[in-house]
Image (cartoon, rainbow, N blue to C red; front, side, top):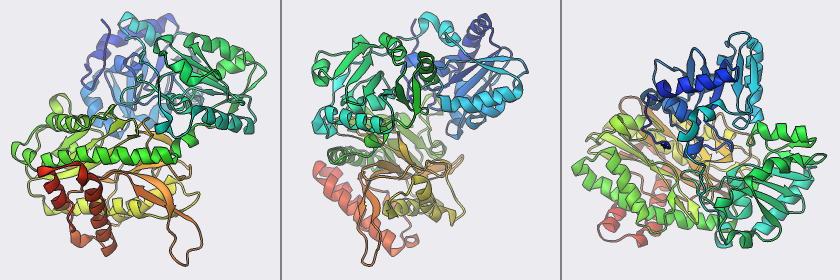
Length: 601
């Protein structure tokens, strides 16, 4: 029977599957084996066929790893998944450690041990530290030809997805793929390469103006491509994905080939300079190209920045998508503020209600990620999902945190609102208002060209730091245009990247506060980088953010006396714009409620 995976994956998977894995490891002479969460395409969200970590351990989170030895095993996750990993894995089988400690753990490997890894699942950048740690321990990190986990999984492993690859019209993309290919081909030539190897599904989707359905919650096609400097390309796809319209859409300059032909194509690149991104493409590609006699040019995926810096058509599409999504959110927030206050539903009903309102827009293609609804203490877990025995009913006197988004042809949304259930306490209002001040700081910041999200992060946190508070997640992540809800290279975080924030980049703004065991607060909107008005006397051009998300912020939780006059002006202006843009799409009781929710402070 083929296996499928969801948040309720059986914690007994380890007891069932580790013996099978260890037997296959022994056949290959391996004392240990590395199991990353990432798949061959470094995806964050995986098709069931690539949920190797879930099969071995039971853990289904989007960030994690395991190291399995013949006599012990360790599970590595980050702070977002503390509760989930406890619920989904067996503590008798897996020692639990922080995700940043994998390399340090390998330093304690037994001397002389052989630890296997699948080079298709690890980027060469990630392997550097792991190899160094194994060498320090006197152990060997050895690539495997055949993944012993895949062997152990056997016939129960799901088939690889074969969702059709379909055109994404220029009316949504804003630029024909022939122009994109010419532009990227020129960038490859300027980097001193003859051809670029693309393995990231988001780059495949963006470059060829296509979308698929191989990756959950993201309209991504799994494949690879070789793009030459003249803009011609070879696109490698499973033949089952190729629709009748695809060849005509791509034209004669793009040759569609079966995925099985990729290895042969790489072998034929001997003597050429091939650009590959060492952060996105697995070590297998580098090894294969070097064996073929190609010169590997290590460089950032040339599609990454053009994809992240949206054009005018994509930005306008995102505006439309967010207003449409805002109407669904208004209906949902009205329901929370009326019906739910009386019936006190559980988190699953909250999730289903929001998803139903999004579906009723008639334009929803999929969610952009699984909806988060945290009642009371569950809201203090930033990436909590309401599953199984953890599901709670909302309670009077507490808070409800809901984080969700939609995939629409014209844009991807992601929004978090925190709502009072019953009368909020003074402490809840105080903490909520501090988070709101942080949110406003990021929404209104002005910054010169070349500024990175790493530099901006402190601007958002400053109001909370002043009160002795902080949050342990990033302030903002990049968002795609009907692509992934998490998109690089842009982000806003204190451990972030030096990538400058460029005009057209869409990012989230989501500071929070989490009181473990009680409740959590997060306010999230999406915003796009735009040129900013420079006041009289200003000497340098500035960038700022245009708000894309329009959904009321719970006024009952705002302690207006803690806001500065400028902050109050911002809240009133934001609510006025929300009413103006979303109001025409709702009617009756929802419209009346929205008018009250958007009234001036």
